[in-house]
Image 1 (cartoon, rainbow, N blue to C red):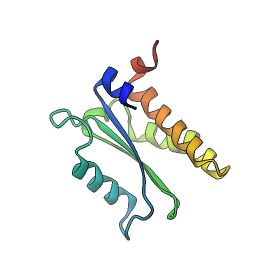
Image 2: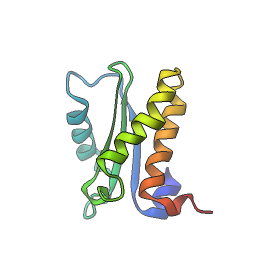
Image 3: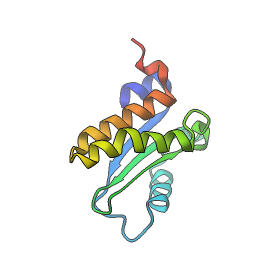
Image 4: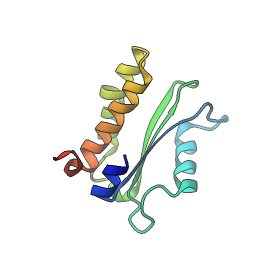
Length: 114
């Protein structure tokens, strides 16, 4: 992830949490992103992939500065097509890796170039 940040300047953070503490994953993700300051302050160009396995929830939070590069529909497709199939097979690390790769593919295609 650090190499992607260096090449694209966008920050991608993946977090798994043991519990959402009674909050919705949307609220938890927004609070976490703001508290941690994900992305550059003046650009709001961070992405948070949050996984709460005990609640069986996954979400991609996208900073406003990247909403054109990673739309809600694209984020949903990454979850549905890349992450959840692996989770259903019981391979959470594979699903997280696939999700992170899908995010990078959308927000920083140049980071995938050699």
